[in-house]
Length: 419
Image (tube, rainbow, N blue to C red; front, side, top):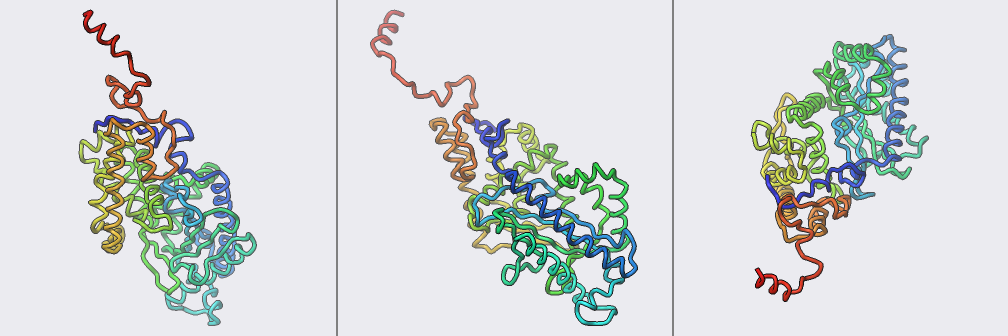
């Protein structure tokens, strides 16, 4: 792809001015999130472990496991574009072995019933009741807000950190896994060097995550309504990590996912727009590495070119079903209304138009190029004209196309006639 203007450096450069740098969480938010996740684990681990052990369960089935998921795993987490309406979303699941339900009298006691085999729906509700009580107490202690009433989620427990001035929340979904697979995960983690693993876990390393959690072939997620839904969380993680590996340029693909999510967050200020997982899958499909032109585009590392290509093709994937089979049944990631799909496509086309003009119109100044890009991605695009260059070194630089002063026309005539 050839363009007259190179504005790649607006997105990626060696300074903290780049768009990608401005999508990072600030140090205070990152620190508080890490501390909050640690406190969630420190609250639930001893509680669940003690209950299991007091009813005869032994390690490793007695100890819950915790796992980051979503953007934390893919490292595609962005700072919010508009606060307080938007928040950083951290997903951190808790996993227990099926033996927990078989061994403990907890579930019966919670419901005022004797220890006995209880219906699966009852167990799911009791699981939530137990974790709700513990995390509600933690929130009261820390000054956080626990999601109750209309803000309560059916598929997770939510902790809102905004009362402490951090625009973020932690969602804690509740999972259970077969005993044999759960034991394999625990033993695999034990064999890893503890210091290396602890550091990797703090950094939420996808590589370490894959090494341990691949053993979980079957996972079910509890809901407040008493359902146990088969979870496709591991299949989804594997799918996107495989996509990164297959691209040959995993860091470029990861940044593109972040840019497209940032576009969404800029446009839909109060939330909404295409889901993150839909955008990631759509970008993955647009950048089909079986095509030679896509491979060349990714190898160029010109993120202005790649983004223009992505947005040129994005409406095709946002306009209709995006079917995946990550569980037993096929699922449409683009399950929004037709009205929503039309709006998403319209905004994607607007972005494609701006990116194309920014790269092709040689009449524009650097400031005008930046304005076009900022219109679609927001003020986190750096307002620095030195980051915009001409792509044609043999041509007159477009920034200097209009001379500051005109030469004397008589002198020009004199030189001509004297030739």
